[in-house]
Length: 189
Image (cartoon, rainbow, N blue to C red; front, side, top):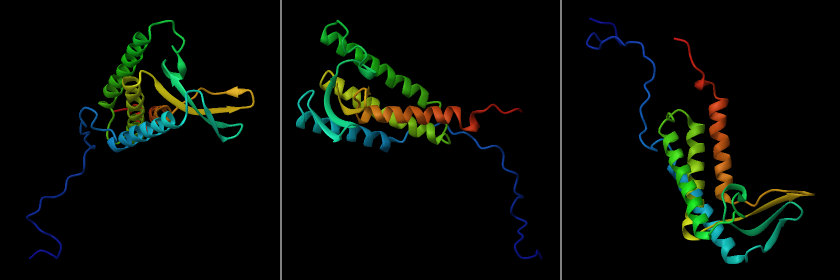
């Protein structure tokens, strides 16, 4: 007779090996809800600005620091190419193609992010939501609606929107994960 708690029919437990990495598939490692929320919030705020403010009209939120200003960004990030001397349809096609290439790059990078890389996955989800939000503007309007105008004293930042803020925060999270989190360091065998 065996002592209580022992069962000769069960095999002895073997020590656990290294965790296996399960491939997440194409864009499977992203937080889709985050991306969808960013897209919805971005499009809602842009629709409100478009409906309530004429182009270049401004409303002070925090006087001397933050205004809501309706700006049409027909260029790329930070207004680059805004004043480029080219046909408006050509500019719209070029900026839309650049946005599509950025989305393809996000997709390629997302395929290589492991499930345990939480900051990178969250960052890519924010970037994806922001990129899609701005791409929708380019496809629908031919330009991106920017409206957050930050300034102080003689300093003035470019106008931006929810999508731009999401892309910036997402990029910071991806870089933080890549540069600071130690699991990316090579290990000796």
